[in-house]
Length: 388
Ligand code: PMP
Image 1: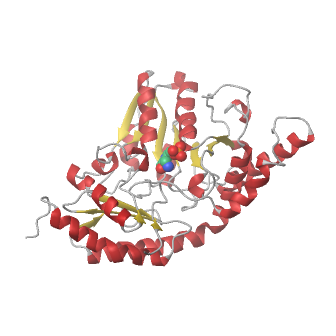
Image 2: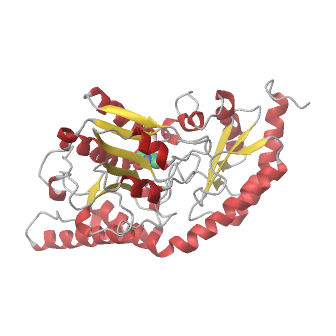
Image 3: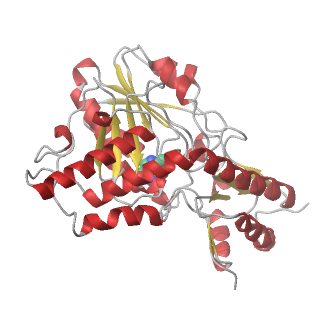
């Protein structure tokens, strides 16, 4: 049996061994509470602030603009709910795109329950949000727009610079969920007028359970968690120091390695896309043909279910995904693919490959050794697939 192949980096990434090494002392000898005034506390505070500076440098921000959280979900809650409740007097209308991660949709739903109105911008067939279409959704009482930098599912990258420039100066704040794109695309808050940016640690090979929210100077948000007033009162609770040190080191490594890694990954991605489309009949690429994440290849195969494909690939030792792991327990087709105009049966026939730091060229060969046979076998069993 060959080595197992893991091509589901969008759902979870291993922690980089260099990150683990940086974290280890913070579980034992450097265990202090950053708020404590003695020497052990001082050392913890130094580590906390060094990590904040590393995360800030990673996105071209100032250290005071970084708030550590327990992960992307918490960051996005703090950004959307925190901004909406603090700025309600200015208006009660929020706009998101239809192709957001499920967490954004659920936060938007909660905002609606508390009296906000939420508008949703549809994307084009490739999953891209057009700045003019977004502009048309902005009303006098719009206070906040939220769009993901890229889709964790179909890999389409949004024109964030254009969207941010369009919103800049209108008085509408802009939140970007950067989780799918961080470490893969350069991000520079000193040149792009984004107001709030959600980051997760694991997506840059740091530990799970840590994240950060960039809050631009002057942007006012209310805390969601109340307590001891840590993180300038914006996120109470004793900091997860080892986790934060891990995220800081992960950000430092990601910043250093991003250009080389992005081109290495996009070569593998392009090789897989070309091989699948050439070798497997009635296969299609989902998402944008060029404006896509360097590590993402997302296909649909006529006449077969993504779930059966995933399980057959699992039997062959290849771990892949049908889309977002966060909503894999529902039988609903992906809302992202439906928003791109796919029929339910087309959306159900999708399979997502995401490469990462420990992927190798041989992984593409392994996929191509097994995928054509798997597709062929499932199609022969499928009443939905017609050969003539
Ligand atoms: N946004 C995007 C684009 C995601 O892919 C995810 C899940 N990895 C999240 C937000 C939520 O992240 P978490 O579950 O780590 O809080």
